[in-house]
Amino acid sequence: MRIPRTTARTVRMACAAALAAAAGSALALDKSGLIFVAADDAPVAPVNSAPGMPGRPDPDTSAVTGVGQARQSIEDSAITTKIKTRLLGTKDLKSTGIHVTTQQGAVEVSGTVPTQQQHDLALKTIRSVEGVTSVNDNLKVSTR
Image (cartoon, rainbow, N blue to C red; front, side):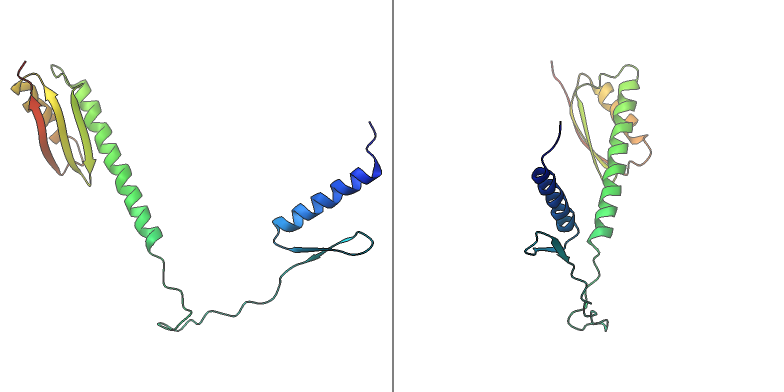
């Protein structure tokens, strides 16, 4: 199949325009249909580097804070996963009704267990996990 010459030319112009636009340049057509690209290469005035002066960008510490928060969140998730794994692997403990959340190493335990012995076993198991700094016990013993 042969593409008409006008269509091929239109496609070439559209491709050139898209590339120039992606590069952040301005386009202009002359009377002959040629595309001219005007790039903005003008030098930018330097930012005043004196401390406390207008125009000096303040250091952005939000990225560092965000990284620290992300790291803490990952550590907390790892602690929660370790606790849940250990609870599931503990013999004579029905752990499906136990809910665990962790924030900065502090673990909150909620839910229900059938006996006081399982309650005590669950707390002992949770406290044995590395990274746990404290345990907030909201675990209930069911009266059924």
